[in-house]
Amino acid sequence: MRISTHQLFNRGLDNILDVNAQLQKTQLQISSGKRVLTPSDDPVASTRILQINQELALLGQYQSNINLAQNRLELEDGLLGSVSDVIQRLKELTIQAGDGSQNADDKKFIAEEVQQRLGQLVGIMNSKDPSGEYIFGGYQGKQEPFQLNEAGAYVYVGDEGQRLVQIDAAVTVAASDNGKDIFVNVASENNTFYTQASPRNTSEPPAVITQGQMIDQELYDEFYPEDMVIVFNDETDVTPARPNYSIVQKSDGKPVLSNQVYTSGDPISANGIQVEIIGSPQPGDVFFVQSSEKQGLLTTVERLAAGLEDYQDTPEGRQILTDLIDSTLANLTNAETKLLEKRSELGARLNTIESIDALQGDVEVHTKEVLSELQDVDMAEAVSRLSFQNLILQAAQQSYTQVTNLSLFDLL
Image (tube, rainbow, N blue to C red; front, side, top):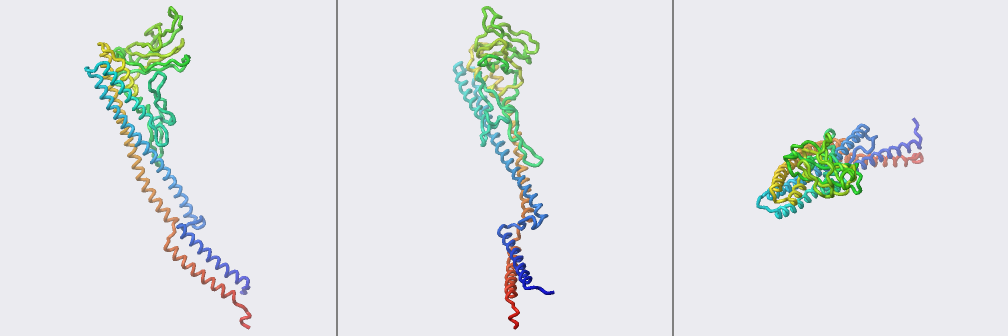
């Protein structure tokens, strides 16, 4: 077969370019450390490499979630430990207040420290995480979960949300707990109550009802679990006309008190409890006294402080204080128990996180080993191949040079 000079040159040049391309690819593999540079290098391996990188990205997200959950739960556990320390001091103050040698002035001094401890508790309960979100606010992480209402009592304004974090394909853990579950829904040793103004009240500014005090536990126990409704009447219902209210049972409307003259801030007493309404309620405004089996930790502390400040050294006053001391100690113990239960839950969650973290660490190591086998270049083999390809290139170049220098005139 006849080969033209042009074809001869092209074949030689193509061989040189082909060997040079192979050499450049080997150089790139060595410099990058990767065997598979493009999908065409190894389509099967390229597909698997893509899958493994996606798996590693998911493991990275799980690891980020693990760190987030672990940090939040450890912070929460530390805060609950601080709350327990404050409760212990409050129990000491409560026992001290019940000492018969303490007079009314002494009890007021104790009440001052109780108020300070109340502020300390609120500060802990309104703690933020490193990202600036309130830890115990549920999903409402941007606002303080415990706030003073118009009546001067602390109320929970967060929600009951619990943030869940996925730390594995089949494992989700709670990374937070709301303040209502931990600090508000605490079992009360005795039958108790809470107060609430109707959202439909029309007075401006709104009249408020205090959280109230228990002044006769036995009398209230006889009434429990009935609720009371304080209803403000037309001023003309009494003579001379003036603001007045009636109290009825919520279930059947049976009167408890009728047409009582109202003065802002004066005590309103019925069935063993005492509350105050502050402001100028309008006819038709309604306030509720609801029975409850639970009493929040802050409410327990607030009622202790109020009871000590209002203490009267009379037989009736001493009995009210005795009941207050007994119920406060029991309720503080219940709050401690709730904290211990919650901290036990936190420990279980942290153990789960640690187990998953260790497992995923092993999975990540194995996955990276498989990835390395698929995509990483064998350096010793690549260097040897580079030397061989370089030798071939030199030979091809020399051969090409010799062939291109041939001429028929050399044979004449």
